[in-house]
Image 1 (cartoon, rainbow, N blue to C red):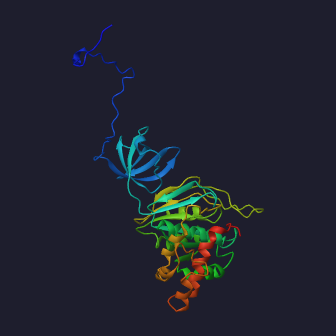
Image 2: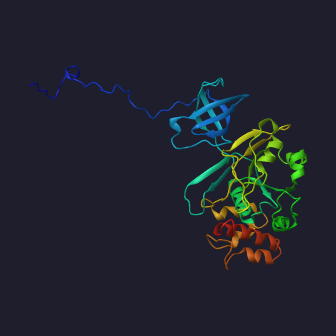
Image 3: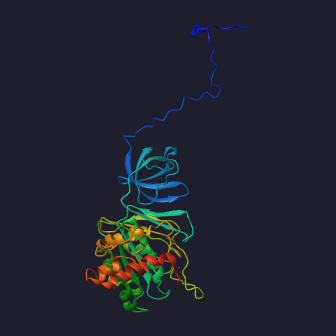
Length: 336
């Protein structure tokens, strides 16, 4: 048996070969400084369709990104085959910082957060005035999500030939939300698209609404080169439409520089991820009045300083009512 003393020669030491033959791991990752910039247009079962310059590229997420997922609207960095040819696949190696993020949960008790779209400037909330009946609680929830995510809201009311918009406009008038009222005839002949388009130029606008309100019909009028399947049917028993859009898709606005993001119809809009303290930022006339509020104030309690702020004439009482209605919508079901 061979024995080694204190002063062994390194040449005498036998080293065991690495049976797996793997190279040593390193924490140094490539910077991909030559990566191309692109925008995610849609996501389908792990494959992401991206726009790079004027080419449509199919890509997958690099393993080094871990659990971080890219969503529609994300600005990403891509490497690999960027030709856009059939059966080629690029790799997303970096997701750039987001300017806004529209998120929702399935319900208020669901901890799993679903990202709808990133980097959108505006949220167009589409609601029918009849067939199906408008759901103000769902509209309120979309508004809260928009304010929380950094998007400007736009209210689009359809089917005005079936019911007047006065009642709904009265409910949201104090929020100073821009709005558009359209009829079914205007949707069909393109007049509605022309008026809506004036609010979309140079912006990325996400369209959201429950099924049967005419959202996808409006998107098809705005982007006629990319028509999506639509339906005008509403279930006579439930008063709800059928889903026709199954995945979010970003489309270039016809005759303009903006983008339209068509999203699947929603039947619920959970707000489990929302911090109520951020909603106040959408009310700049009320926000200074919160300086005297107790710590962690819900803005709907006896010691809230906003009551005094409004009584002193700094803001309209209707604005405070609107704020508290939006904050309370997380505690209510959309159909209430």
